[in-house]
Length: 294
Image 1: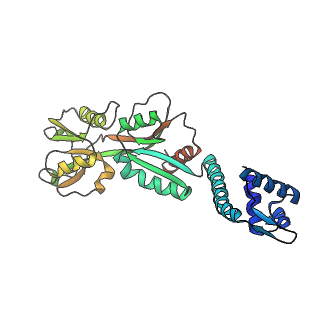
Image 2 (image 1 turned 90 degrees about the horizontal axis):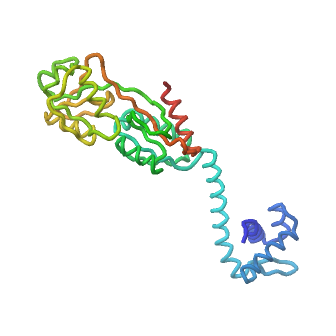
Image 3 (image 1 turned 90 degrees about the vertical axis):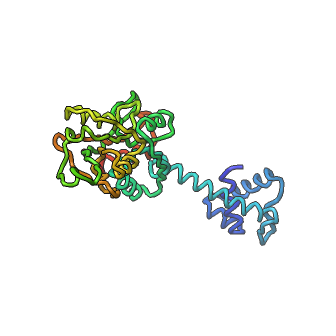
């Protein structure tokens, strides 16, 4: 059974006139009649009752028409969707992201991309830098938004932005009265930071900041998420260095202060497999670059 036969059958079933049906599908009437005859032979029953004056659907023809209409509509939709995916106008992009990106990069990116390509579907997964690289390697993600600084061969990377770190502090003396803080004054405080991963990332950025300040924190408390660390800061269990955008998160008992110069920064980047040829992915990367020009 061919789509062409379904198209001819549907036109005839709706027109109930062979000449009008042939004109509708732009073929000669004998070609249409032959295609329908072949379809009836393939199915093994008559679909039309024919006489010199009238054409009518048989009972089998009525049942077949209902199903054929659905098949034809689905085929048309499949063609439309396939063309859209091929042009990068439709399909799905699986995106991994870190919590830092969720605050600064992701909201504007997703809103903009859905406006530009409304038919695109975006699958979001919050993952750490190491987890993102693993999922990218396995083909489970199309793109990761991460702070990992060490990449394997075979990956493309686009730096999206750099964001300064600020101090999240318990709302108590001496921090409450300070306009800014120096890491050298925080050496005796427990530093709460996201856990270390096999790849260089947030943990190493915080460690570098202390090293450049010439101090070593008295104690390090690792957590999975930055937000968890903020809850611990609110309980006066330590301090944390967080991206500047996180000061939008208001937690009782937590205050935010800028760090003294030189201020450490994190680099937020998009990472993808170089062999991923998805047109939609590459449109996403292009839009990301235009939204966050460097």
